[in-house]
Image 1 (cartoon, rainbow, N blue to C red):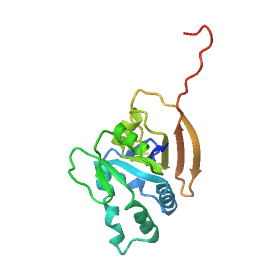
Image 2 (cartoon, helix red, strand yellow):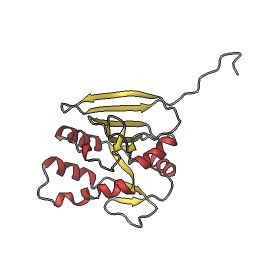
Image 3 (tube, rainbow, N blue to C red):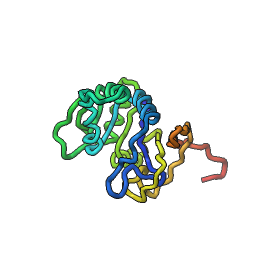
Image 4 (tube, rainbow, N blue to C red):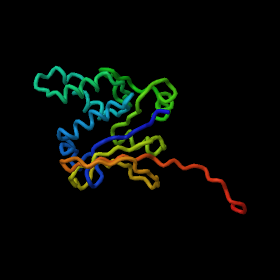
Amino acid sequence: MRSVTYSMGVSLDGYIVGPDGDFDWTEPDEEVFRFWIDDIREVGVHLMGRRLYETMLYWETADEDPALDDSMLEWTALWKPLPKVVFSTTLSAVQGNARLASGGLAQEIARLRAEPGEGDIAIGGATLAAEAVASGLVDEYRIIVHPVLVGGGIPFFPRREQRMDLELVETRTFSSKFVYLRYRTARQQARPQSPGTP
């Protein structure tokens, strides 16, 4: 079954956007950008909300920019054909290889998992990811920790009174001191009851 992944850059204090709405500190260096290029190769479809969709629209025509370097051209070549599903109540149309979601998040993920296809189902954007986390739909968290404290803003993890056990799958420290953390959700398995226990 296809995994649902949530990947983003995050400040050391846990935010993807600062209190002033700024996220320029998330701009990757060359080594981290190369990592994201390799990561997107594993994605079969990308789910996103309106704000992330509008932020990423740049990449639909970026290859027309003569100033783009080879890495950015490589990213664009991978991003443009990638199927995207946009969740929005305000957009009536989307561009590129994208479609508006026809159902709720859980229904879309169930449908995508049932369809033949390869690659992860990636979720981007804190609001949409928060819904997926709350519904127990995320299988893996892939985080690039940036060496910055922003003091508030939009958190990577939703602030809910809900415990979730995770299993560390992979770590990597980049030469620029960014740190990659990959966690898998530890799905609870039913345990056989001992005699005499309720």
